[in-house]
Length: 468
Image 1 (tube, rainbow, N blue to C red):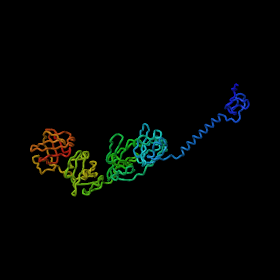
Image 2 (image 1 turned 135 degrees about the horizontal axis):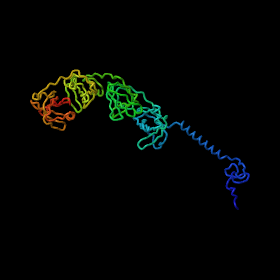
Image 3 (image 1 turned 45 degrees about the horizontal axis):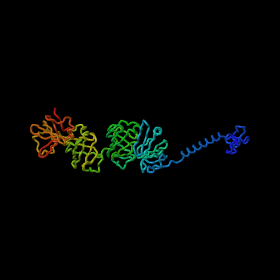
Image 4 (image 1 turned 90 degrees about the horizontal axis):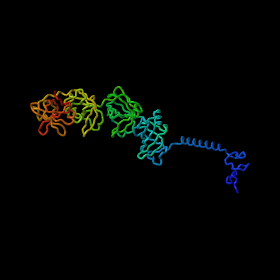
């Protein structure tokens, strides 16, 4: 028996037209007899209902996502199971920022006591942060939420929404340079003092040395700070300066990192108090790093690699005053600071090989009250072993110089006798003319005795002059 193609015995009764009995499938009107099919939901209604249901579902998910609390985690909790999770971390900025103005990439590290997380933001988010003035800085307290990514050697978090970064900048503690220690790392402080040096060790980094009556500290201003917050003003040595910033360590030495160029305020004149006047016998190793003012008479001047050391005597005790070449040479009259000179020196106390030193930072820190008496000319033939330790002035003609491991030896002949002049390497390399046979020279130095023979040892390049 042949089956009627217009009927389907396997289909339910609702799929056949109640009027003509033919199979009509999903049609609401029979295509054969035109009869209306009762109880049918139109396909268009189903489509619209499905679209509305999906839209409502998405809106519900969006509302839940917006109102649900973002789970807080620690750096130690961040493991593989949380990869790509949207989480929140609270801590403080532990390292200086990285910023690329071309790509708009901004990154900083957050430390929460259990570890560190690298937070990154990209162009659109970075632009929004900059427009809102929300620029993280070293030491800031932050709460940040974003997508967690577990890297091979560190944990990263991508900031996707600018509003998901909240930061608080602590109020600075008022301290002095000499009070800073390694234990202050991460502390926000405020210091006032005088600009002693401005140095650019390499492009993109400016180091400003601040000094007050307790010591000095370096202010480190990177290119990232100036790019994000503005250019540094022109800074000159001797200006008064007040700075707020966070203490960081450079090779275990505290330095100050400002969050903003505006944290550096300059004054027309120094705001530091005068250095503490100290007697030499009152100085101890515990004063290391302190700025002091001492005075006395120079009883010895000797050279070393990079400068000279003056032994200062105030009648009660002695101490060394270390004068680098840049300081000694910048004196208005360097030869006036010699044996017999009365001087007042302001400098930082340091300890080198268990010996106290006062280190002035510039020629302005030295005041010559009474210049050294002029050193009289002597003849070589008049020198005796009893003159050892005496500073004398000689003139004569050089024999052939002879080099040795630590410098150059050369005989000086003035017609009354000969004496060996010993020039250490640091002095030889500083001389405008290398010693040569036949040169007529004038030389000042300390008489020393070595193996029964007298030698003359110049102390600085200023003790040596080639006669025209």
